[in-house]
Amino acid sequence: MPLHSLRSLHLGYCGSIPQLPERLGGLTALTEPSIWNCGGIKFLPESIQQLTNLLILDIAACPELKLWCTADENVMKLAHIKRKRFW
Image (cartoon, rainbow, N blue to C red):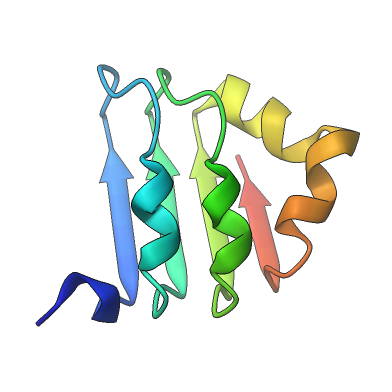
């Protein structure tokens, strides 16, 4: 299966990953990404706006990423996501 057909992506306990690649926007079938305990990730790439099929975004135990997602200047970048859960 090609990567652009990937529907879900779960990243957990990835403290050494400093950021997600801009190429994330190429995963056009992605509907349910989740990121938990990845304290090194502090923001989502701009290409997140290209993922128009996103239904749910789960972010847990990533305090700086949660702050980025809920900051006024970034809320519109995630407006197309049906349900966002920050824990």
